[in-house]
Amino acid sequence: MKKLKIVHTVYGDASGGRWQAMLNTFDALESKGHEGFLVYGDENKKLKSESYPKFVLNSSGFYDLIAAVKLALWLRSYRPDLVIAHSGRAVYLFKNAMFFAQIKCPVIAMNHSHNVKRTLRADGFIHITPYVAQCVAEVAKKKGVDLSQKPQAVIPNLIHLPDDEPSFAKKLGEPVVLGIMTRLVEYKGTHIAISAVEQLKQKGYMVKLLIAGDGEQKEFLFEQVKDLNLESEVEFLGWISGEQKRKFYKDIDIALVPTMNDTQPLAISDAFAWGKPVVARAHISAQQIGRQGENGLMTKCGDVQDLVNNLIILIESPEQISRMAQVGHQDAENEYQFCKVADKLITFLDSTYI
Image 1 (cartoon, one colour):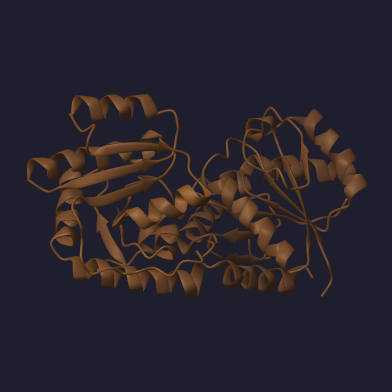
Image 2 (cartoon, rainbow, N blue to C red):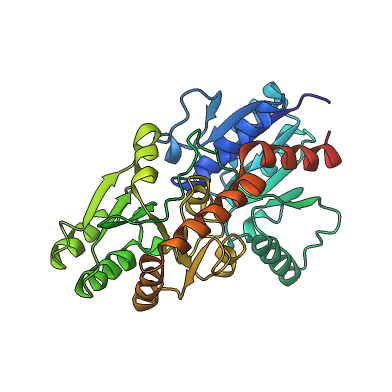
């Protein structure tokens, strides 16, 4: 197998799942013998990338030709075999830079959201869910873009299975511990989960909500907890990783993913990996990961009462929690774990570019 030099790139704010997905893709392909290099802008300098070779180049937007020329000079020196772009801005920047560098190197768009219009210039596509593939096809048809000659594959975001084996406990303690791991922005729906905790408390259920993450909505959520008198029921942990993340998943009974706009919430597959059932928003993308009544429960978007009702179902039926957790963990092993997704990436690249 030929060893490839692969650039992994993202432009625009990539905090949260998109950044981690890029690093995971880097790691997966490196594990198969391919060399990697990160390229990103100043907006992502604060994000974790210490051990990765990198080139930080600022770009002001889709039509920043100065940045494209600077990138072209770097490309002539590095001479990559392939670029995997994790955003539309990255696709545009690298396609423009390839023109200036006069280098033939395919740019593959890895689409993480339904906002795919800017990625249509790519030479190939990796869609993280069938829903994203459908979005690309619909937008291309609307724009009159022929994708028939561009390689495509549906490959999910990968996760790392923990070393610890899940316990799949069939009994719940008091309080029942709910957990959210997410960026604290409005569309992630953390405020909905907090409102659900208030209703559960009013109904006499002993619950505690652990919120792991940070973001622009943090102060609003602090005030919401204070206004609802939930200081004893809701705990903010900030960003966590390593041993803190391990403790988080050991402590919680049910993972909540009330996000209103994600196409493959990593929080779902992550919870599966740790052996936790999921209660998530019933969006087509989440439903392609979570299966109602099998590895979790789906709730109506933004509907606090429906979230409460589904949580009560699980709280009053702990054997369902154990059963769903086992099914979800099996899904993580079969579909999303590192080695399985790495193999899928290599199969796609091998059939098209190697």
